[in-house]
Length: 387
Image 1: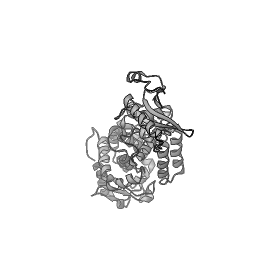
Image 2 (image 1 turned 90 degrees about the vertical axis):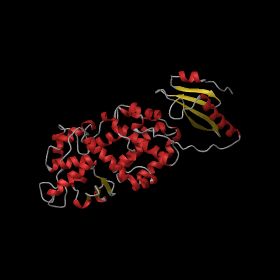
Image 3 (image 1 turned 120 degrees about the horizontal axis):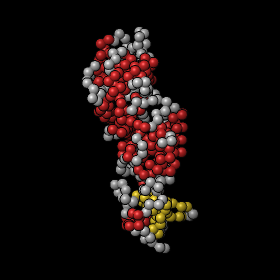
Image 4 (image 1 turned 90 degrees about the horizontal axis):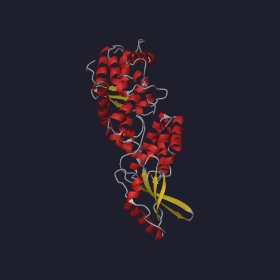
């Protein structure tokens, strides 16, 4: 059995995609993007097993030729003693657990099907890989085929891959930074996310949000204030339109949206920025009923149409109210270091496992308060303060 066929010099120079043998079951896989991963293959009872040994010259723990051989020797010794190698959890293994947890929280059957379909179809290249060995290059290679052709689907797939890896981290099956996080390096390898389509909800590029907010604030109408408040809280327009004074704690700067008005049917507490509180205090001065954003008809909320007219006038006909949520998500992912679970919680998205949920109940409100104030500051960037 010939061993040590490769050398550091040869490995460094390898560029052509393919699989190169070092002998004795040790191989190096070179991908079209230039990444290189070590793996070991053995057969027992006719069953082929592949074990990932790490990436060559990449990440925080690069595996040299010498180290790869040491790992391969350790596996051979265990096999020679007849030991059973411990099962290594694959991406598909953890994906199934993640989906099971997610589906129990979703009410929308279409949403459930989309989670399964995107990971089954577009993350298929990751399925057989040990979750612990997945690299940023693996994620890039999985997303490349659809990144420009199906941008919205690609970004949703990326976020769902990130959720699977977060699940693995919580179980101790993955260590280090999440390779599917946008700000973790993917933005250097894939086209900027603000160029992606946002489907049926046109989103204003977050770089233009401050200018749009400034124009909205020149209007004194209730529809403009409701639209601005929707942006500042990243809420849904229906949640804002039917907001009542009983849901607001101005002193504590918290708006509690009851479960019956939330998409996920769970109560949602929204930390209010300084500017959001200013809007509410001004509305309080003219309030005649229980609705915060009462429209022209007594006892009826401001209409979606009126809010959209105010937004269209301030944005040169671009953007939608729901698109504010996309603008916020893109800004938070691209421009900040706020944790992904905190950002998703600000959007009232249910993510993660029971451990994450318990942690979030403990302190995420204050973490989200910092996030939403940062967003409000960004929305007022280079603009004068005031009502």
